[in-house]
Image (cartoon, rainbow, N blue to C red; front, side):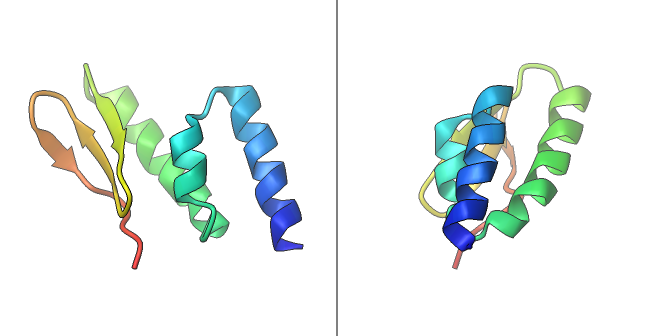
Length: 74
């Protein structure tokens, strides 16, 4: 069932233009994806020129400097 849930999330996000790196980041914890999406929406709508960098253990938000690290995996 978990694989089915992940596949469903991937299909939805792909249709909405979600970056593949973000989807891969949440493969182990797909239940955290809605929390990330809410956070990302707030940041992108409130701060100009934001770049999202997906790394192995975190997702970083930056403009000139990194300023937000909403999630980290253990």
